[in-house]
Each structure stands twice: as C-alpha cells, then as structure tokens.
Image (cartoon, rainbow, N blue to C red):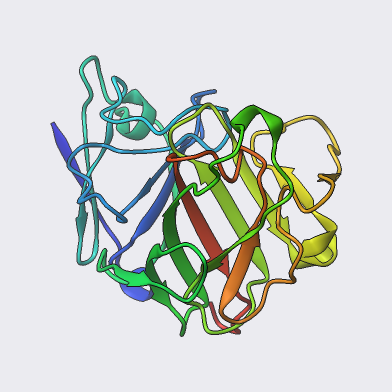
Length: 239
C-alpha cells in the first residue's frame, strides 16, 4: 500500500532530500533525493552505515516526490522501515530545485547540480576522475568541482554511491578545508572527534570558495569512474 505524506502550513514544500528514521525501532536511517531519480525506484543511501546506494528496500521506501510532500510504499516484505502502522517516524526535508539539474563546468570535473542559493543548499553529483592506482590513495593531483551555491559552503556531506563508504562531513568549525579534517555520519562512538588525512588526499590543497570545492585522490572521494553525491550547505538566516 502507499502512504501519501503531506507537508502542511509553514512546512508546505516540495522536497528534494528526505531523511527518514523510525523512532520506535533500531532500523537504519534512510536518505532519498531527487537527483537522478523520480523516487519510483526507491534509490536511497543509509547515513548510519557503510553501504553502497541501494534501490527498493524490502522494508519500504519513498517512491515519489510531490509538490507538497512525498509517497511511501511497502517493500517486498513490508513497510516497517518507513511507514509501519502505529509506529512513529521523523522526516527531515530540504527543497533544492525540484529535481531539475544542470551541468556545472566551473571546475576541473563537470558536476551535475541542482541548487537553491536562497536557502543556501546545493546538491551535486560527479564521477571520480582519479586514473591512478585506486588503492594507493594518490595524493599528487587535485581536482576542483563546481558546487553552484554562489557562496563558500559552511558544511559539506559527501558519499560514494558505488562502494561501501559512509557519508563524509566537512564543517567550517573543523578549520580550513585544506586541513583535511572530516567526520563520518555513521561513527556512533561517543565523542568520535575529527579525523584528518594528509597531503591533500581528502579536500585537495586549495581552500573552498564561492564557486569551487576541491578533492584529492583518496578513494572515498575519488575512485576512478565511481559516482559521488555531495550536499553543500551555507548559513542563511531563516533556513
């Protein structure tokens, strides 16, 4: 069966990113987005686990973005991950550009982006350009990526969709991007702290700016021919 979730009142929006969690169970989180998907295939990532991007979940999934919400449907076994009867769920939602994307050629690597500069959010996708030895974490070359925000990002979430990698996070309070600092969304250890990479392998060797971010050669951000998703945030009062 299908459940239509409607955003009413001040929350009325057409979401492009929907993050769902069952508050009554230990089920994993589910994150769905409209870049490259209408939602009908249930394409999702799991923010609290190191997994590749999945499709129709056996425990239910988002199968459509609407002008004022989204639709949820049962999976092959049930719908308990996203809509089990009588259980409580939370959904965090962001509006970007209604699923409408464009190519951004401002950097070394062409990105597919949708952005909402008014709200301070952009979402982009790119293919890893690293042609070196993927297992060597090549740090000799750096690649810039156009993000479409129009201002320098304050926070970045990055996920490799093809491999068993987590969501990697950079935040302005970690220090400059060239410090190579990051955290992982799926690190649930108490006070895990901020980790770093060396020699520009994570965030390159040029500070992020209003047009570009940069990546190095570490395979969690840059494995040849693999696909990556990035969500960029800038602080905008009221959003």
